[in-house]
Length: 67
Image (cartoon, rainbow, N blue to C red; front, side, top):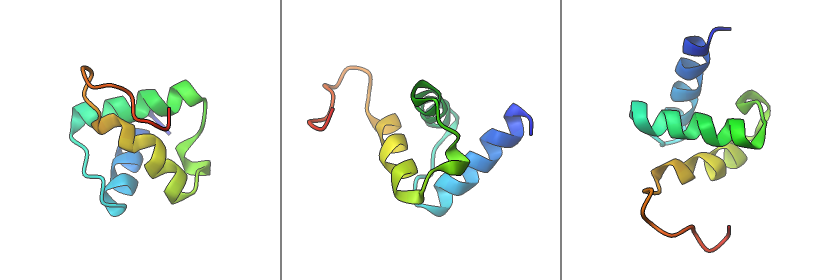
């Protein structure tokens, strides 16, 4: 699977979960997953959403309380 295929697959899965990411947010989500060293295909939907929702946080906002 190529990087583009993985991005398309990740984008489609996140969209089914209600996280409609643009290219910038998808890139952030991909980097977050890479930082944790996990394959998104191995994560449950709720864990994937928990990690990827951080992509919505802006760079200048403080970290959420659970971090």
